[in-house]
Structures are given as structure tokens and as C-alpha cells.
Length: 238
Image (cartoon, rainbow, N blue to C red; front, side):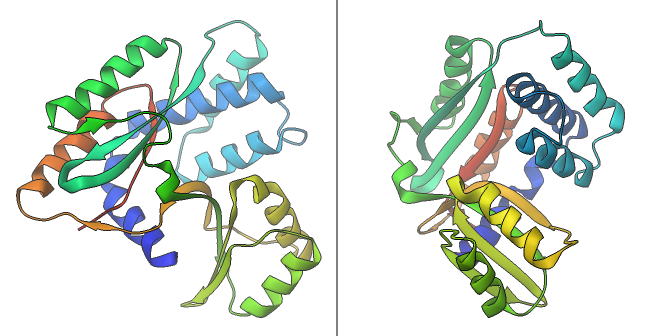
């Protein structure tokens, strides 16, 4: 599982280059999470994790505060989640997660990205069954047996624990995210998570070669230009 995750991370790194896009993405997500679960990070664990992640990605404090102030006001936009699945260049499988205040507009925009790059958008569940929806926690350490034991004692449904280059990577179902993170903090005390995410990880990767590489880059760039797109997952390997 680790290799597939790393491949996706490396191939998608270029999609987070535009700071404005990153700030907008976090601002919208923080607003939605705070509006639904409250603006206090102590009581809203999802918000706390999201703010921590935003700070690691060097999102300015004023961007975070603006989103929280907006959520505190109670008004504003009503965003809903939307997920689109389909097949990208080179027969890759793609999942696109969005936050939208206009689902019809967002679907049309995402579909256009597929059609303009000769790809095919599918129905819900078309490719997601070929991915694990997993929580991923990475931190410094080398005793994977001790970590596994701590997680099992906390009754966490662990998928996998890997140790490599002085780091431990814990994989668990996305529904076990907070349970796994809490168990690790209780077992280790102060721990800095270098990766603290919920991702779609492909069961298998698909090589992208030749002309498909340029088309794939164009496809991803088009999706990333859409304000409503929050995350893109795929099984392409370069």
C-alpha cells in the first residue's frame, strides 16, 4: 500500500503549486467544517486536524481566521460535497472530490475536463471500488510492532503498519481516523504527524506513457483550475 501511496503523492505534487489555489481550497474547507461542527478546534476534531494541516502547508493565519470568522457569522454560502469518478488518459482511474454551491455547474465543469481530454466520466462507484478510502498517519519512529500493539489495544481496525527510513506509516479505514490518531497520541505523547490525511489509495497502478503523459498533465491541470475541485486521486504511475 505504501508504494502506491507514494507514487500518487509524487505524481500529484505539481498540482499544489499555485498558492492562491491552495489558500482558497483550505479556506473553503475550513469554513464548511467549522460551520457544520463549530468553530472551536478543541470540540471540533475535524477542524483541528484541518487547521494543523493548513499550517503545515504554510497557509497564512489570516486566511484561516477569515474562514472561521465567516463560519461564525452563520450566513454565507451553503457548500455540499460532490464526488465524480471516471477514466483518465491511458485508462487510468480518477476520483475528483469537490465542494460546491452549485452542483449542476460543477458537474458540467468537471465533465468538460474529461471530454476535452478524450476521457470518460462515469457514474458513482464506477472506479472507487478499486481504491481504499484510508486514513494515513506518518511520524518518526521505527518500532512498528509497538505501534501495532498500541492500536490494537485501542481497538483500532488497522489496515497496515509500515516502518521505513526512520518513519512509521499507519493505514486504517477512513472511519477509524480519529480513533487511530487518538490512540497514537495517547501511546506516544507529543507526536508530530508528517502526514495526517484521508486519501483514496489505488489497489493497483496503471503506467502512463507516451502521448498519454502530456494529455494526463493537461487533464489534471484543467481540473485544478476549477475552484470547486478540492482533491484529485488517481492510479496513474509515471
